[in-house]
Length: 339
Image: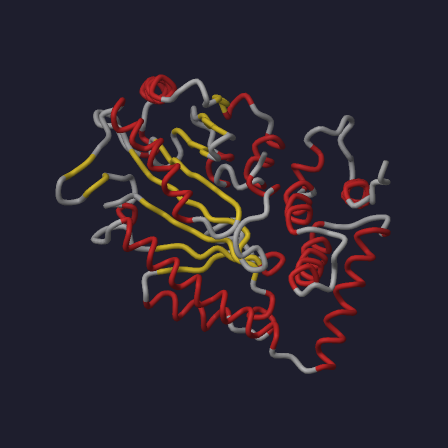
């Protein structure tokens, strides 16, 4: 079962938690100057180091649509999907471990879990990391820690991130102030797909910026403390509304629910707005016919590449894709008769 199909802790504000570890193998060039022959050797070494629980997908064997669908599931980065050099994804769905081999670093190991679950995600990622360290000659320096292609990943090589749903803070235009506050403590806030992406549906990623000079425990504690404060603030803002504002919010949420059930066509952009209002309605107890896990599954499933990758023939126009999206949503939300 995919991470987005399960309800996690603090589901009203936290969508997912992710741990990413950057690692490289001694004896090979870092980055884009790696030769094709060395790239094949690294892929072979990584495959041998991992257990049979991991399946290998060579990215050059995938269509651009299938690669983009992996991005939309947050299993790989946009850069990894677009690279032309040899590269592979190793995945263990049971443990939610996804390893990008030959992205910016030789190894980008990540674990993504639903809700606020940074400690569990790190534990699973660390188990895989230990396996790799035992089998491979991982580049490590006693003073600098793990050696990486980009100096900003030196040290632990750890990027921990939490995906948050922040409609109240967004509505009150508090995100720029939040960004400034987070920078002071070594954290950053980005859009739903990381650096350079937009915050569709009021979804943001908050992650650490500093990897050198801090322990893993320090990094995780710093992020967890910040996220805890943001959750408290977001919840307080949702409750602190006038009766009139609460009525208008309920109306907006119920209208969005109705559109999902009955619209003939829904664009990606419109779905982001509907997701925001329906999810807020679920959080506030306004909407009870849709669960967090159902809505989050829809959020991933109706993204453009995910929606069309198994369609034959594929929709030829944007309108045809929008009609398909509306039909898919309607079918997913159908009330099944009891029997």
